[in-house]
Length: 250
Length: 336
Ligand SMILES: Nc1ncnc2c1ncn2[C@@H]1O[C@H](COP(=O)(O)OP(=O)(O)OP(=O)(O)O)[C@@H](O)[C@H]1O
Ligand SMILES: [Mg+2]
Image (tube, rainbow over all chains, first blue to last red; front, side, top):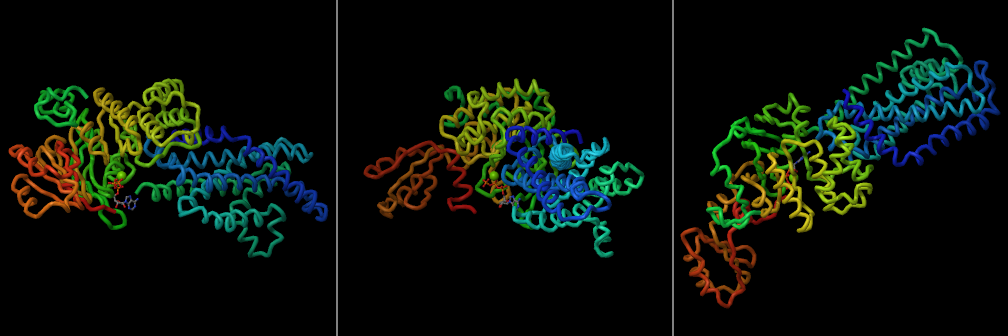
C-alpha cells in the first residue's frame, strides 16, 4: 500500500506547477457562499435552532465544499489523467499496483478537500464565527469526507465512457447531497420519508458531525456518524480499485 | 556496426553480433532460465482471439524482435509480459515468475517504452524521469543523478526544465526511452521505439540500444522498420493474426524465405509476356504487385543472366532484405 504515496506525490508535483490558479477558486468559493447565503439570504431567515443563519450553515458548508473538491478532483482530474494523459497506464507499468494507484488518487482528492476546508475554516475564523478549538476537528472531518467522495467519484470515473457522464454525477450525487444533507436547513424539517432518505446520503452524516463540532459538542453521539463515514469510505475505495482494474487491466 | 567483412554470411543489415549465439560457447549466464518463457499464450478481446497460442523464449542478453502487420498482436503480447493484459490461457514466466502471482516483482525489473506516448504532460522533462523513478522507490537524490545521466544519454539535457509540450515527437520518443531506463531494468520491452523519429534520431536510438544490449540488457522489441529489426535483433518472430508464422535470425529468414538478390522492375506493364516467361525461368521466383515486378534469386542462381534482358527497362538490383521476407510472408495487402 505504501506506493500509494508515490501516486499522491505525482499529483502534488503536478499541482505545484499551477497551484496559484487553483487556490483562487478555493478562496473565492466559500466567500461567494458566505456573501450570498449568509449575508444575502441570511438577512431574511430566522435563527435556526437558536443560531444565526450564517453560523448554522457554516460547518455544513465546509463539509459540502470538502465534498465538492474531492468529487471534482476524482472525476474530471482522474479521468483526464486516465484517458487523456495515459498517466494511469504508465504508472501501471511500474511496480505500483492498481489498488495503490486508486488509493493514491483518492488520497489526493481528500488532500484537495483538506486544503479547501483549511481555507474555509480560516474564513470562518475571519468572519468571527469561530466557536472553540473543536472547530479544528472540522479539518480531519473534511479529509474523511474527501476520502469518501473521492472514492465515490473514482468509482464513477472508472465506469464513465466520456466526460459527459460526469454531469449525471454532479446532478444526481453531488447537487442532491449539497441540497438535502442538512447544510441549509435541518433534515428533520423535511417530511418523514424524506428525512429517512436523507440518512442514506453520506453527506448528512458529515454535516451532522460538522455542526455538532462547531457547536462544541464532542460526544459519543457522533460515533455512529463517524463509523458510517469510515465504512462507506473504505467500501467505496475498495470498489473504486476493483472497477479501475476491470477497466484498465484487460 | 562493426565490419561486416568478418562475418561469414554476407548480409547487409545484420550486426555481427547476431551470430554470437552460433559461434560462442554457451556461458554460465546463458544457461540460467531465459528471462521470458512463453508457451501457448492465448488472448481474446470480446470473444475475438488476437493472440493465438504463441511460444517463444527471450534469452539472456539477446534482442528478440516481434514483427507483424498492424493488429498482429505484438502490443498485446508485450502487455501480457508487462502484467497489463491478462492472458486467457498458456504459460508465461518472466524471470521465472508468473505475472498473475508476482506482478510487482516482475515490473520492478522491467523497463517499458509503450507504443503510445504516455509521458506526463503536467511535468517537466526532468520531473518526468524523477517522478517515474519514485514509482520504483528510487531515492530522490539518486533519481536526480540518474535522470541527468539519462538526459545526456538521449541528448535532451538542454530540455530538462521544459514542459513536455515543447518537445517534438522524436524527442518525446527519446524521453520515453530514458524513462524506461531510469530503474536500470534487466529487461526492456520496446514497442515501436523509433516510430516517428528522423533518420538521425533513429540511428542515435539504435546506437544506444546496441550499447545497452552489449551491457547485458535483454530486449524484446516490436517494429515496423525491417532495417531496424535486422540491425538490432539477434532473432525475430514474425506474427500474423496472433500466430507465429516464422522465426529465426534475420539472416536465416532472408536466406530461407527469399534468397540473396532481388531485382525490382518498375515498369511492369511494358514487359511482354514472352519476356516475363523468360525471366521466370532465370529467377527462383517472380512476383508482381501493382506495376512492379520482383525477381528473387537464391544462392544457386545469379541475377547476372537476367540483366541483359532488362537493358531498356527501369529496374534496380539489390540484396534481399528482411522487408522482402516480411512481404513474402504476410502478403502485400493492407491490414486493418
Ligand atoms: N483493449 C482492447 N480491446 C479490444 N480489442 C483490442 C484491445 N487491444 C487490442 N485489441 C485488438 O487486438 C488486436 C491486436 O492488437 P495489438 O495492439 O496487439 O496489435 P499490434 O500487433 O501491436 O498492431 P500495431 O502494429 O498496429 O501496433 C487488434 O485487432 C486490436 O484491435
Ligand atoms: Mg502495437
